Length: 258
Image: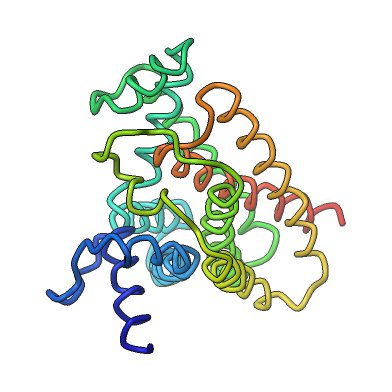
């Protein structure tokens, strides 16, 4: 049992990041389906490494350079997996007016104007959100916020998967391995792992994040279902990116005004 779970975890690590994994880890469909439960744990790793780089860089450079190095680190670790999905969603829903057209545009590897603009705007918003947050407390506090944001944003993607359906019929999508089914055990495990980093803050104000994430989830789920009848892998990437930004902005408002 433990050996199987280790295999499932490494499968998640291989699929969601560029971190090297043991050679015996493969793309077994069964393990890839189960790997969804460790998606929030991947957020711990990505957010944690980004936080380490942020803290270490802040000892040598200005906070702006440290933030950029941290953002670059998280993108390199994931290979821009979620940013790419967000950009494709911007292209697809921005340029397509029918279900088939939207899906066709999102599948196209060429990035269009909507995708470029969306990517620039969300990365800029992320940078300035982090820059404002560090002014509220300190670097160590911001490192904790980053860990929570990366974990909760991936949990929100899992929650959307549990409430919607995968819409592509072909077998060549990057979302295929995680899109077919989700057991209650996987959903509970992912939720526990995703919410655990909240314990870093012994402050009831962090609970205010939950209504925000629920609203983001409800809106995006309704939007995706309205236009394409469900979600794709790109949609999940967009959910992760938007949810991460929502956590940063929520932390800012909560700590500044509550």
